[in-house]
Image (cartoon, rainbow, N blue to C red; front, top):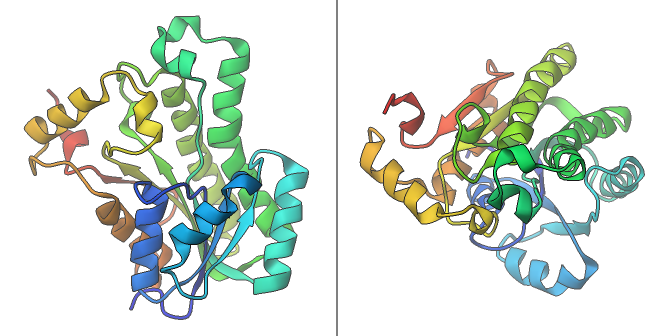
Length: 257
């Protein structure tokens, strides 16, 4: 099993349809011990029910992944109770609904800052706090999630595309900074999946149809398929890969039309 004996922190799990859950399932089936963070103390019972199939896993509330002191407090607790980890999965992103539904040109300053703060800066913060707390084992791997809208204009993606572009640039700079310590940083660019977040994108079902019609494999991807790619990036099998955006989208990104 690829992750036998490894401890993996998965940040941002919400429900069984989320990509984070698909990653958790793949990692667990490959031998990983899982640690989760989630938003909202009121969601504790739901998250415990959601993660109970991952025997031995632990969950922690983190109500602000872009808030320096909150992340430091939670990470300190995680390290104290679990020791160092071998990998962190960052599955956190958010934009205001009106900034997804309106034309991009009408994005407010607050909306622009919010999307970039939550979706991109939070990953930089996670990497920095983990390093400062000496929370990462040797050869640890950091993985985040991005989307094709970072490089191409996709109707309804708007400011989230800008945030994902910032996230992808952050992956490259973090890979350079952390490489000297043998820590790898990569992103998985997943094809469109019916997640709770995707519901905020206007006419999302049409995106799924286009991918099925136009991608080389003529099918959409599943959370488990994306999870398997993340598991590979978290494992020693990918120890020569860092600073990369790995597409798991049935090849759709290579098509010109």
